[in-house]
Image (tube, rainbow, N blue to C red):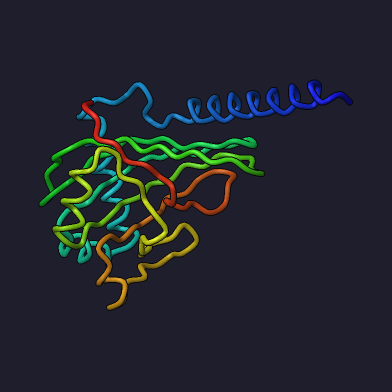
Length: 191
């Protein structure tokens, strides 16, 4: 096999994988094309209701937070190359103050699709201010998870509650296992 034939296969495989991931993501009904504010707010309300009924301890967490970023529906898909997309709202004192999109890209051995919701609880004013001032904030490995995709209970202890940002990931549906927010980028949008 010649070197140029081999590199064409690699590029072709990459392109096909990217197209497949984009097609699956677009087909999953994650709100693409439905970015107006009332729809986002309705989805945020429904997501918070689900979280509070499924994890009653989240109510106290929400009351202690200085703000919450609620992403009602994130669709993640991949075939060799993967990505995720969703839209949501930042709420302070129960009122929407900004709208955000979230995107994530990754490469490696993967196949499948899933949808999930997540909420970021900003536990300090400094963490909330840094998030709002950022032109594109990326979630890192330093997030403390209080609700994980594989858990059925709220895991908040005194060490967790001292973290500046807490994450809740719940409501998974699909064929992929394990939702993580590492590498997820949030950008303010105008719906």
